[in-house]
Structures are given as C-alpha cells and as structure tokens.
Amino acid sequence: MNTTILVTGAAGFIGARLSARLLERGDAVVGYDSLNDYYEPALKLARLQPLRDQAGFRFVQAQLEDRDALEKAFATFHPTHVVNLAAQAGVRYSVENPRAYVNANVVGFINVLEACRHHGVAHLVYASSSSVYGANAKLPFSVRDAVDHPVSLYAATKKANELMAHTYSHLFGLPTTGLRFFTVYGPWGRPDMSPFLFARRIFAGEPLQVFNHGRHSRDFTYIDDIVEGVIRVLDRPAAPDPASVAAPPHPGRSATAPYRVYNIGNDHPVELLRYIEVMEDCIGRRVEKQLLPMQPGDVPDTHADVEDLRADTGYAPDTPLETGIARFIEWYRGYYGV
Image (tube, rainbow, N blue to C red):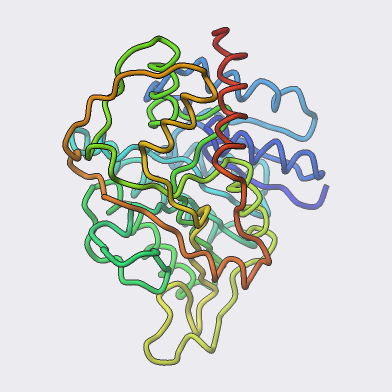
C-alpha cells in the first residue's frame, strides 16, 4: 500500500464510513479519535469494530488538542494524506459550551495543520460546514458568497478553519480542501441530530418538538453521497487557480495557493415537516408535532450550490430523500431492535 490516509474522527458518523470505503479500495487507514462522551460512546465503538478487524487499519485514541499524541501518530504511521473530520459538533451545544469548540476545532486544527506541514502531507481535506453561511439570505448557498456573519460559535470555528487552511496553503504550499457539509443523515448517524431524535420519538409514539414551526428547510444529504464526495476531492489535491484572480476573486480558491472550498449537499432542500412525514411513512406511525420558535444559532434554510464540485470532480450527491430515510430506518430497526 503506497497511500496511507489519516482519518481524524474515525469513530464518527462520516469518519467510520469513509474509513471503510478507503480500506475497501486498498488504502491503509490510520484512525484517530478521542471516543469522547458527547454522545453515546457505545455507538462509536460499534462503528469502529469492523474497521479494527481489517489488516490495513490502525487506531490511535487521543484528542486533536493533544499535540504530542498527534505528532507521534504522524511520526509513527507517516500518512501521505489527511482527512480531518474530528471536531466538537453541534450548533446548539456551542451556545452553552463555547470553550469546547475553541479547544477541539481551533487548537486541534492548528495541530493538524502543523503536523501536515512538517510531515510533507500531499493533501489535507477537512470538514467545514454549511453553518458558515450563517445569516446569508441568498439561496442557494454558493462558495462564491461571503460568509462573514456566522450565527453560532460552531460556525465561527469552521470559518476559522478555512482561513487557517488558506494561510498554510499560501505560506507553506500545503494543498488544503475544505468541505462544507449539508445536514448529513443515514445509517450509523449521530444521535444528537434531528433524524435520530425524530426516529426515536416516532418509534416511541412521543410528540416531536419541531422548531421554527416546521417551516425551515434543510438540504439533507445522504451519508454515502458525502463519502463519495470526500473521496473524489481527496484524490484531486488542491492546486492554484490563476483564473480566480479575476474580479471579484473567487473566495473558494486562490490564484497562487493550493486551496479549495466546496459545498457537498443534495441540492434539493426539503421542508422539515416533509422530512418528518417521510419518516413517519417508513415507520408506519403518526405522532403529535409541537411547533416551537426557532432556536438560537439555527438558520431558517439551507441549500447547496454544488456546481464547483460537479465541475471539478464530475460528481454531485443525488440520493433521493425517500431512499435515504428508508435505509436509515431499516438500520435503526436492526441496531436498536425496534
């Protein structure tokens, strides 16, 4: 194996599925994860177990903030590529726990950048988020849009990651690509996200709390589509784009630095009440909806413009909502025995 890929957050929703795909195609994978208790560690361990059974997989349990542990992982395994998915996630959690986001998402990310710089990594791909669009009212969200008004600290840390990555691409020639994910869902998903919360309550026959009175829309994107997008980008290291110097310059790339930012979303936003209806159909039960005001840090709507991703990689997500939810509910029934 000539390619060794360090995947941070390897026990996470996206990280575990990405690691499995990379192993399937013959890459060596080094998983790096703290296995913290932000949500149930048992789910993380269950995602991780099939990976540990494979010869091409190695695992390091540590935090990104632990600079010595991260440096040791790079020195031991010599990764040629890095996919940084580890982060303190969640918009609402950031309102009450801001320091957790600075530690994991800012301090942790500078450690990743420094390690990539000093160990000659060929390409760093890292998770950003659709939340960086914040108060933007223009839809669909384009990487050409300004993202200067975040409405949560989580979003601010992700925007900071993009700025930090650009600096390292500019100063040190490190190829970096940021991926703004749009509401990822599917089997093995995160229990703190709405699809999981809705499924749990619908199966239990309990009322759903639906914020913004169910009127906001999300560009729900199926997990396998996200992973395919990550792989397509990973295999195409960022390079300078002289055309981006034209006025106004393209914010998602650089004329002189190997730097890129892409949206990865389904490009078909769905109103939240419709998402719940499809889930109810799959489960075979209707429940009461408690319609509530929008929560601090949330945005009314998201919609990904994926033209740059499609133009550069020939790929864009396309799994229909009904297909993705059916697969998620099938997994949920099996995993939780309901």
